[in-house]
Length: 298
Image 1 (cartoon, rainbow, N blue to C red):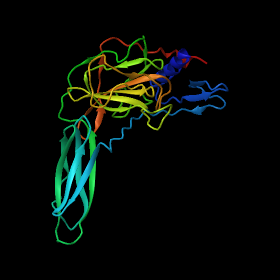
Image 2 (cartoon, helix red, strand yellow):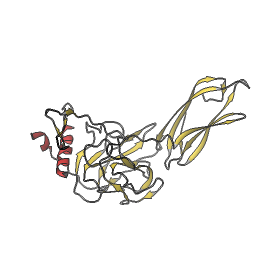
Image 3 (cartoon, helix red, strand yellow):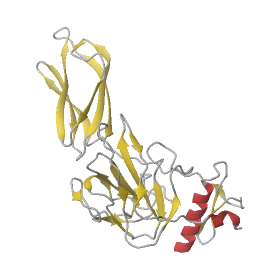
């Protein structure tokens, strides 16, 4: 069964070298899924998007406190990581104290800061305004340090199924330099670099509602972040705020989210200014890729 999954993953990787190629997904009467570059009766065009969605709105948010003298506007960061925020105000009516330009700053981990005090221009009349608030993980002032990552798993050998700039899902800013490694469900996943766990997801089953499936995000000391995706439901063994060392157990590999088969999606990201981007990295050992035999088969 694992061989069949490896073949499927190999097909996907090989297809990334030919961006114009159409891939078809076929499910037979026994429920076995296969992929091919040749159409077959009942097959559907396969479109893969391995996007990462993190819901931080409960942990990074505006807190507007109405006081007798006006509205105090705070930004609250409950994460165990700094966040860059940008705040502006629009649709102003009877408001004084709103900054003429957007406020842009970095909130430290676990902090709460007052950003503005808004008062009524005409006392006794209501104030009206629309906050425009956005936030991004990480501190853009950090400098990524050179580091070769040991394999973030135990066992193997396993092989790369989609590398950097893969046309299926490794083309967006957040995942351009990600690597997908095919491995059986239940393979131990370990920290490839020391840091602090800042975000986890552990409840996704199967496809789930989050394209990333279950994941662990670790903030490294230089401000970069390692993210381990598509983990097995209920297997995440670390908590947010926990410090991990190289080799610390994190979870078990899985097949959750937008995943074509059991594999680990590992990516390193950093904030470069109002946005996370993936950055190039290297493993400390050579990692072989699946051969391109899949496209030559029937």
